[in-house]
Length: 143
Image 1 (cartoon, rainbow, N blue to C red):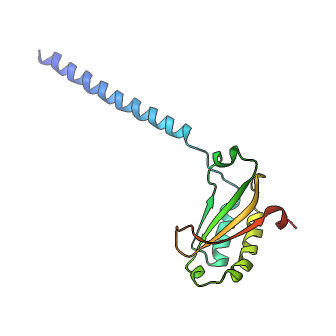
Image 2: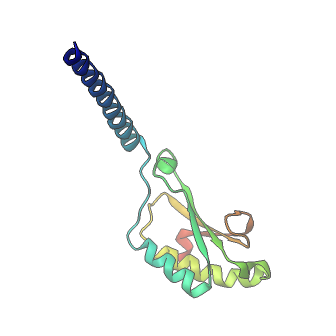
Image 3: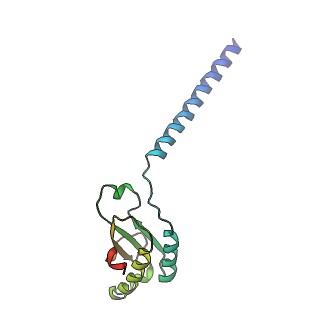
């Protein structure tokens, strides 16, 4: 009787363990294959590091981040949120000079052709996307 009870408990434990393993694998596969693909461009990180260093920027966020966001659109705007405490006391006119340099540097990234303009948002507070926004058309920067 003890042997039978022992094998029943081993069978139940094995079944429960097998259930959790298959559940984990199923959830992992669904998550992995259903997550949207990130947009990645060669050299983008190097350009961002150069922009941070040259213009004393703490953090750069970009939008859109995923391919699905531009998939069904004919045109899209490539937005960069540039965060620095220096922008708290900077006048919009002086930001325009720096923004043109930054836009030309961004233009060296081989972005998707759907991006027809760049929008640079200079923000004073970290992760607060409100600030001075400056737009540049991509075709005007290629001269």
